[in-house]
Length: 203
Image 1 (tube, rainbow, N blue to C red):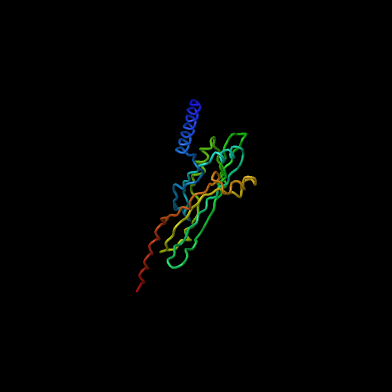
Image 2: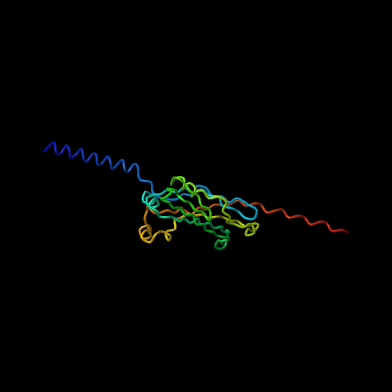
């Protein structure tokens, strides 16, 4: 009897220790973090450069490797800040980014707009997916002098483009909760050109 109790206590101790170790090293949750966002000028517009850190849960990674294509939406808005009324949207834009796996070639495909790239590993594909460059979002003629603006950016998985059986299970699931916080910042625009002084009239 004493031997049985001793063995039982050892098993309970090991089980408790395993639980503590699991709690100390939790499984990384899926999610998207915006690491950087800026608007840079081009000839006629301002282009968005942004960096996203995208983490997949094991369930999402398994789905991709089984052929499920994922479509992400990058959503941008430029707002005019008002003191005595609601802020006004100056312009908005959305960009679809698609990640898929081609089993025959064992390549991951990333489609951003009309441009497609291939990668040998999911890690490399996610890095490319999270590196957005030169996306024109604001035309310079949309900006007014003396006005305060702020920009907002978000990236999310488009659940509506998942296969029907996955849509139901993905909504509300932590494993499929691939959406960033709405990132807000004040962009720096070019200063307006100084007005040219009028030429003196001939007497």
